[in-house]
Image (cartoon, rainbow, N blue to C red):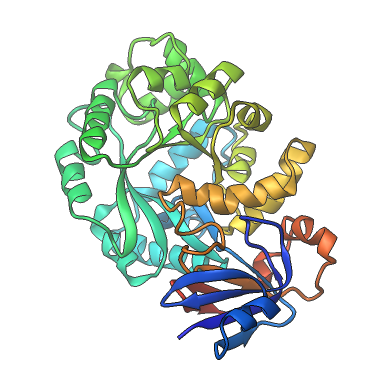
Amino acid sequence: MTDLYRARFLVPIAGPPIEDGALAVRDGRILEVGPVVELKGNFPGAGVFDFCEAVLLPPLVNAHTHLELTDFPGWREEFGDLSATETFVDWIKQVVRIKKQVTDDRFRDSLAEGLRQSLAAGTGAIGDILSRPSIREIYQTVPLLGRVFFEILGVDPARVSLSVDALADLLEAGPLGGLYPGAGPHAPYSVSDALLNQVLCLVREKNAPLSIHLAETEDEVRFLKSSTGLLAAGLYPFAGLEKHLPAPRGIRPVPYFASLGGLGPNTLVVHGVHVVPSEAKLLAESGTIVVLCPRSNARLGAGRAPIEDYFAAGVPLALGTDSLASSDSLSVWDEIAFARDWFGSRVASERLLEMATRGGAGALGLRGEMGELTPGAGAHFQVLRPEAMPQAQNLIDFLCSPGRTEDVAELFLNGRRVWYN
């Protein structure tokens, strides 16, 4: 049976908004998109679900997050670790100290809460980083799509968070519900060259996706070029890794990762703040996707990503919230609103909304399935019910303004309502 879903405004992303628009859906797939009058004629006898004064559009995609850290603000208070984090390295050290005190059971509860908050914010797909594979079964309890990137750290061969053999087993085990496995080497300063090369060999062999924090801070640039700065002088002694401090590579983060063969359409470069125009071109030519996390970058003093250079080079872009250790919420709607202010005139509202939908879907291997409302795609959509509807000409700017998280009324994935306010 065919069902029609109608709203005052339908925003397909694949085309301009449609006033009094509707979706025709059968067996969890979109058959047609257009004015409700036309669809009623094309599908006589179809059931009509009328959301009335509402906005219907694709779910948002959180292409980079750490949902296992959702309870981090509470842990910070509980463990009395309220020290000031004036630098990025201070913040990393605090996260490491607190994570060491948290049990798997509590990480499991924190991940479950993060998944719940994601659905409530109209998120349909995630690119989640998981450092504790033992709790991965939680993903099977939710209808979200996307990727789970298993985090890998290690500069000392005797102290590797996840061995390459263990990672291979996780990749071969297959999906966790609608979430497919990938590799998550943390960053160039926390993964040795040897280990990173092994991981890259494995993902090429398995044709698996990869996510890496890259070019996030100026200190990371300094570390790779000269093995000096706060990462070398602060993080390595803190972790007892002084003797494993690498020799200077004499190269910036993006060219370094490119030299290892790490760039490509299966790679997500997360943050990408300290990237120069020639490096943006390198990313674009390789098809590498960059996931921007502006709220986290602002909170941690990392800087502002060169979004104009990315646009000029044609780099595929997506948005992520990072974790509640560095952001105030897991809502991509909140990320959009902040990014609109953070980047100002450098980016149009239409582009931000595209990054958070179609761009994010492409980043997580969901192109054609999610991210736009188009015939043949999955019936994935959210319904916003604002207190006051905007005028048609102001709709996209309205969607990119603060307050949209609270407007999320319903979320449908695969044609089923999975969340309702």
